[in-house]
Image (cartoon, rainbow, N blue to C red; front, side, top):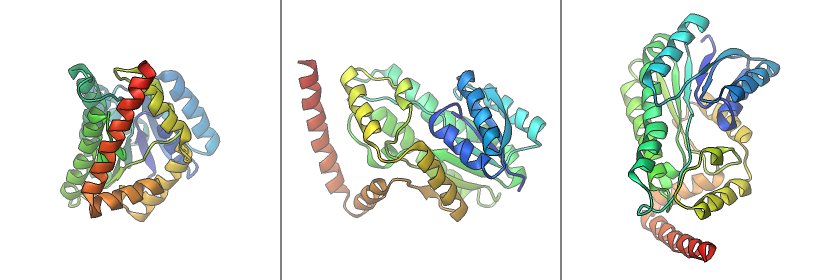
Length: 271
């Protein structure tokens, strides 16, 4: 393996930390994001960590930009061994409050961005017998209240990853899907939702997380090395997933109670 990796959303947060974790192993990295300043900072950090690479601005909603990125990987790195579909945005709000535009925006980036990334890079991965790492979320498995469009988009990423896992085995392309819970990140910069109260609640969850993006990148590195398909970096997330598999109704009841508490909190904030 030639140790060449492409990462979307590499300009900050988890994407940057994944780049740094693999850079420490001397990998060559193709870094993409919509923000060029963040990308340049990541590249500088990658070089300091012992890696090398290049940056290219890429909006994952635009398939032609992803195919251009694949072409750049071919020209500059001679191909690609691993892709990380990490670019994503946050949103929240009860279903009744979410507009169809909120749905379109969320699906276009968090689900179709991953579909397009896999599609654009598959020819290169088949040639290198490489691997796909898709970043989903515990929201894909838990379906918490007041984030239905995010839940659906991320659940789609899990279903896509499961589909590719079985379809690409014959081609010797490995597939992994990562489902982190809330963690300390700048995800709120992209947050879109109908009420400021919802953004504040999500912000508290992010701040209270005991695990950082750097910790998660390390956990992903270990999970990929073991060959794990589903990588759940948070212990609480792993326990919640076990509970859901054992007794889904108990989890639905807990989520329904959480929705009641969130609505009550929202009314207090508005009062």
